[in-house]
Image (cartoon, rainbow over all chains, first blue to last red):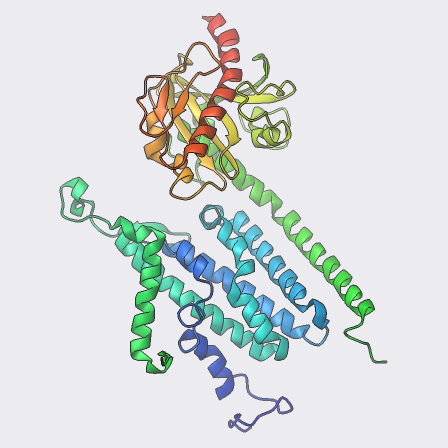
Length: 231
Length: 256
């Protein structure tokens, strides 16, 4: 089977891990990252990155909704009437989000409480609707699945990095779902206990998430000059 | 036969099928997860009640600790008369068990008029009181519910054996503004209530004052920037305490 897929059209059955498909997975991680390049989904990225465990659960939720939405819309792409396609996408996304919300309430009640409205707000996350409209409606389920994984991962790694930075400097701890929060700094280090260290409360507040995302964008653009717009 | 994908009939048909399928899927999910969610909600309620008497419970030990500290669960009506007393294990299906009284739901269906400190239309409601024993002391934990700026706020207040001194309080909210009204659930706000007393005569038994005011033994400082939420806490305390104090005055003091 040919690996040269640059000229491949839909008639030829291409390998799931062809160059083009790998690009679908890889691009959203860097070149077209939904958060740092397209600046979508910022709202939840700022709000729920105080703790790593929330970011993990949020990322998994978005991954699930993204994959489900992209694959379902891709399967239905020849059936959906054009005039109501946005509503159809919205219904699919909204039902997946409600399922996620219900499952979290049943199995992760504490984290569900902390994520509060932000699980529900996945419905309006521009990344998801954007990928459904721009990709899933015009592509087969296979590539749509990869596109979903790629974009959800692009969203997830930013969330994870931001939350790790914020939790370490803001709370002096790291938390994972099911393990709780692990404070790794000895208590005797803190000023309240006679030590020299103090957690940076600013890190817990939303503005610091924006600054952290800004730093990531800075690092990313200095490494990847192609992203810098010309003026 | 080619179907016109953009025809009105097809569009309607598609929409109807979609709604039915999605509706069925969501209903199935909701029904199958409901028992777990209710168990979680009950655990949370136990944690809140225990939190009011400063017992730090987690989800996994809430049931045992609740059984250990809460000696009896009493329900009273709006005029302060005792309706039912339950002891032992909480029965989730028994509607007469005071633990199962959902005062948030009652509040929604019997919403008092704005600024009404007496909850005038609560005549057909029952209110739960949780009698707790901790290290030889008796505490009474009473739940309360009210309105904040954006949505419901609720809490649990523990009174000491004299039924007048506040031992501990725990508040929570659904959608108050983070950093402002939402701070009512933080410890720095709830510790202010500890050791304060309720006034003997109403209708103002306790006040949450606007930020920076001078407080006395019947009042605490509210939250700066959370004026309406603080006022909501004030109203909810007075409204529910008015009812509970009737019971404490009638029943309990008479026994002494």
